[in-house]
Image 1 (cartoon, helix red, strand yellow):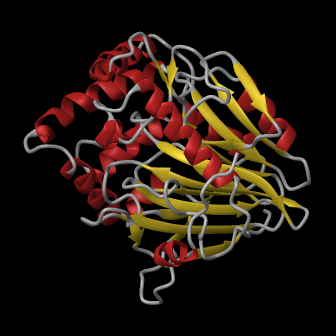
Image 2 (image 1 turned 90 degrees about the vertical axis):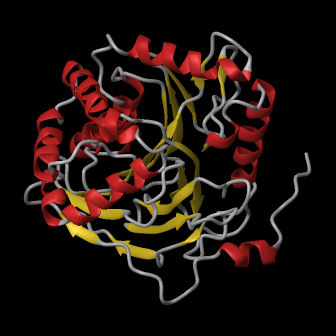
Length: 370
């Protein structure tokens, strides 16, 4: 099927080329771990919390302490080994919202795993309606029993959504499609609430906490793949995983205790591939109550096809981040290679525009094996 490709002038319009943009911080957390991140940069952590709360209507902040209490109880009931760390971060910052952020898992993304120069690369965007995520993104070097790894995240967040372990693997998370009991757009809120209630008694690891444990303990791509396939998770999730050698790339589509693996079509865009009955592709927040079930599936397919059909190199220009991969909620672009140890990150914000633009310079980190 012939699909329209982005015009070169569109690519240039969105390329992160301005030389005066701020740099993304790279912090070494091998002494103290993620709990030390908020001690090193409390202003960045509090600023992100304020930006996220500012997305909601006035007065919503009054409900955040109650949300924190629910999130803390749910995480304490899960199999996560990082609950004490989240408690330490919340105590350090002294503000509400840390527990809510760490239990949110409301991310949408597009990911591509492919080979360039004889080695796999993983390219991904992360989309979320909250402002501030692109402006305040950080790269953290972290320790693990299997070796050091680099996580693209924020101070105050305990999980891993995007990471690179040089010489071992790189991986990212996409939010899985929504389990639907209804089809009407107005009833999506009902299905979301029903899914949250269904997850309440689950004792498994949150998906982002499992990915962190994999980075800490998996010695190579094969071990990482087995863990991401088989360890039960508290919510459905899509993992994209690449190793340092040719052929080491896959997409792992997870339900709580099941898995489907793709090793040929290694792109992901918040839907199962092929789609499954009673599961609906994720969609932008501005279309949550209006877009039909079929329209959501079609848009997810377009995004997945767009990134799969990109025939350029995964370069420093991030010229693969164009519509529809680029959308009003794109906050981060990442490209990484476990074979070379190259990790590139750029942050995006809309700042009132129709589409986000880069708000940071492209940060390239050469990650060495521990």
